[in-house]
Length: 248
Ligand SMILES: NC(=O)c1ccc[n+]([C@@H]2O[C@H](COP(=O)([O-])OP(=O)(O)OC[C@H]3O[C@@H](n4cnc5c(N)ncnc54)[C@H](OP(=O)(O)O)[C@@H]3O)[C@@H](O)[C@H]2O)c1
Image (tube, rainbow, N blue to C red; front, side, top):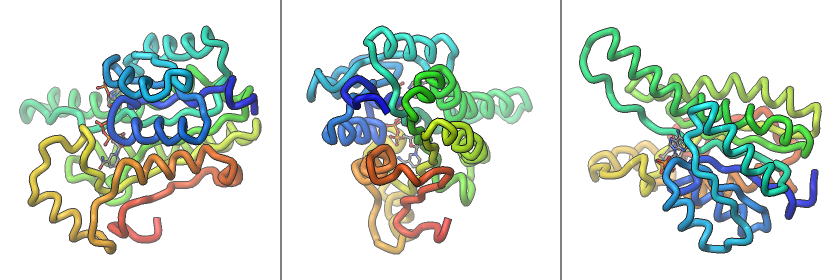
């Protein structure tokens, strides 16, 4: 691996929620972090915590051009790539009506948001990742393990699992790793903006520990997977859900 000061960890969805918490935790542990998202303002708010630790790269990474722009910014800054955290994702807007066209558009939007954002970012950075023995963390969900009741969300997250198995084999040849982190219910992020108290209480009741998770807890797991103690952890689905789903 390069000197960590010359090599960055690229975090998508870094302006809010879990991505933001991961970026701040990584920077606190001495890593350089490239902050990726479509809106520049939230990324700059994170970067302001310690400008020397962060590079801001605003881009829509569901598009090849956006992913290329991020890889170009990393290269132009003279940085290698020690890792990618693919936290961009969420629920696509519901189908506008019952037509098959609307159903198809909803599923495609969910796949773009949850799968293509991760695939294109990793592929754009693959040469740099391979050169550094870099590590990849993909954000999935408990919904990939038990369904999301929306059909498309859990299914698009589950697609990340099989791809991660391939990535682990490919990056392993270079000393790198790939893993999935599958959180349970973590309110307080934009994903859950406006969630009702009924839903919060219902989700809490499904846990064994009687509480919701925090973005900081998930950020800590992500930072551990990128840190010195996790080099032998690869090809795994790391679940953090308060005991909502057991053993997987
Ligand atoms: N919170 C939970 O309970 C929970 C549970 C399980 C899994 N997850 C997963 O964890 C990840 C983070 O979720 P979160 O809760 O932290 O939600 P969040 O606050 O909505 O974060 C999602 C981030 O992704 C960015 N993003 C979306 N589309 C993008 C694109 N095309 N290109 C670049 N950036 C994009 C958004 O910023 P811009 O709008 O500025 O682009 C936003 O910062 C998601 O993948 C989510 O599915 C969350």
